[in-house]
Image (cartoon, rainbow, N blue to C red; front, side, top):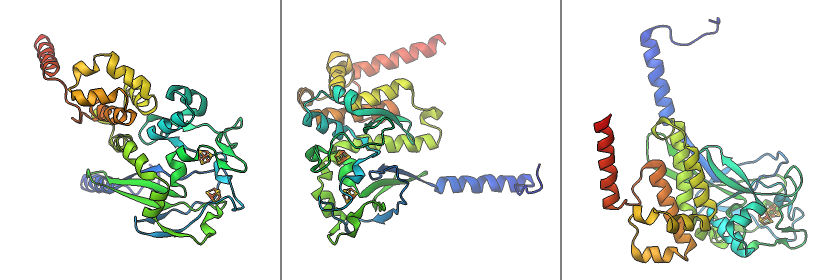
Length: 316
Ligand code: SF4
Ligand code: SF4
């Protein structure tokens, strides 16, 4: 043992130190940043400033700024389910083809769940975004990803380990290359969100962000049932989040609808409404990952499952 050891010296001290550590751990917040701005690779100092909905900030981005398009190079953009839907429609591509052509797979570090990121040009992926036009800017502007809409705001949720309550807030990301902060246009966070059309994205992505957040917080406690998410569950989460057609096939061409009790009128709408299908997918993932009962199993399936379980216990 080294001379500078300053840990517990008796069982009483040890017990107190452990319990203090537990208190510290319980009080430690779990913070998940969903949209943390279009970060570039220039190592710019970032100054996050926490903002409430009615707080004002000065910012304007327009073709006249000297930094025009700078933020669209080497950008680290996680695509949300709504981004993939909107961009696929914009490009008239099937989501899985959009995925193959324009994205790279990645793992969301805090939750260990698979996600897709927008592929940048250049061998090192540090070049321009493929949707960027040198003069006109973003060529998919009407359907640009949520991260691009949020910029220069970030969005985070914060949860204490011992509580189900979470607080959500915005923060301002000030990167030195971005001159939009020197413009005089003042706006509230709420007005900026409305102007950028963020609400629609947040509404559709809500189930997805809930899952990332909950899984991140479960992992800090050892994961569901003390285990990490299984490769099978990761695969299903990726399918639901990125391939709406694949998930539709899964719902209508497997025993999914025989297993889960989905209202008939809703089932009919699921055939054509992608956003509704996403909502079902995230409810289903919440049942699979966290045993949350947003989706009810059919009575007969549940009874059969219970009978099988009893038989297993009886024969054990
Ligand atoms: S999608 Fe548009 S706004 Fe976003 S990085 Fe690409 S060009 Fe820029
Ligand atoms: S002002 Fe900021 S957001 Fe606009 S082009 Fe320049 S770096 Fe990008």
